[in-house]
Image 1 (cartoon, one colour):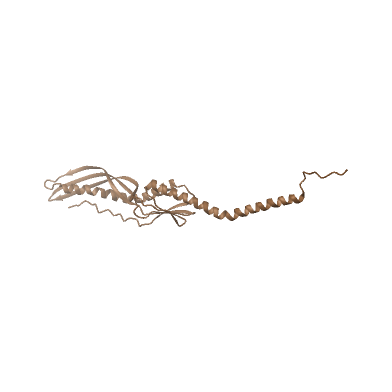
Image 2 (cartoon, one colour; image 1 turned 120 degrees about the horizontal axis):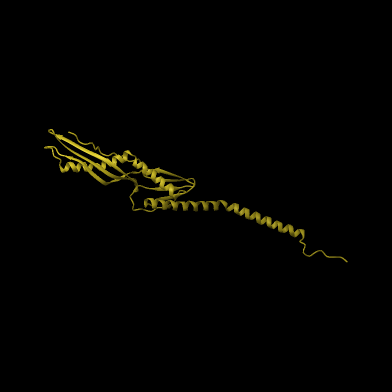
Length: 236
């Protein structure tokens, strides 16, 4: 008696058809992924750069209470006006001495002072501060740092010597006291305090911004010609 073929066996034509459908589906999936890969890459890259721009803005707010103009791939990202006009980045104490000696008709008067001052250096933020974020580097444009001001900590009078008829006047003393801040400013300039402020800003930015891009600071204004007045004591 004849026996029929098992009903569970799949015929070869059907198997080939199923395999062909799987191969075509896989090819379509790979094609779609390849076609959309550039767009997805650009979208992801732009999102990363925008997050980086926000981090940079936050860093400037934290360091300088300043919100600079952020540009990402040549597109303006954020621009806000900050009420801050100056940013003091470094402060250092300087001790300066001043001596005044005047002789008239054989009678001499002498004033000798020593002062301790805190001198601050930083940036004039009334000039434009801009950050340009590119895939390969971040360019920060800021004005050169400069001496912003001096603060008196202490002044000691070491000598107030009157001559027999050549007496110290209140104007003499006021002039000598007024010269001390200029001496401290000159001392800070000679010790490159403004340059230290520029380096400190770069250090703080690198500390707060962790990114694969190189961070490059460009100073957009010439260094200030900080020439303190001649403070030589008058001699007779």
